Image (tube, rainbow, N blue to C red; front, top):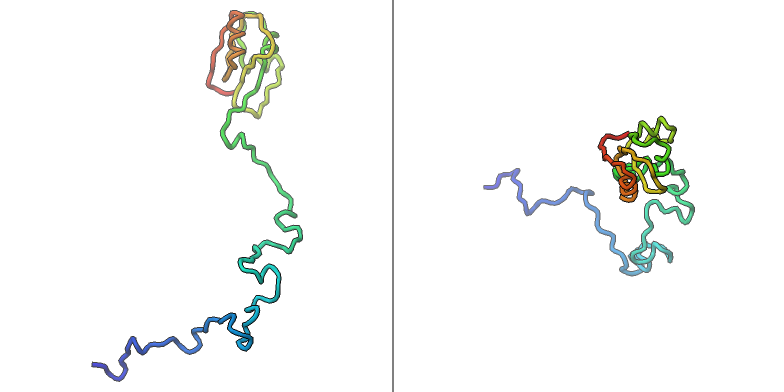
Length: 162
């Protein structure tokens, strides 16, 4: 059944020099790896669980803290929060009774709206209003809405941005 060149699994062994015996630590002074078992003397590395992370620089200020931090990302923009051009009621007092107040009308009056800000216009309730105005904005506070309606005006919420 077995010829001259037949191979048996039980007779297989790894090639010469392909396997290295595991270093046996702590087996007496004569072994060459006794006493401190190849860990040197004292210090963090000699302790059990004593490891130093790869970027540790021996207490020197590490590279990741030495290099300058560049750039800035706005969290508000990333979170998708609405950022409005805020206008209070005391600013709306400049308009004539019966006028329509929107972002374009405010720009004509010289009220500084931020051109970079594309989220829209929000009317806030600081101040008093005595004129009957039609206010078109993306958002209006409850206080502002109540004051505008009490003066005889009305509020329209529009979805287009500035």
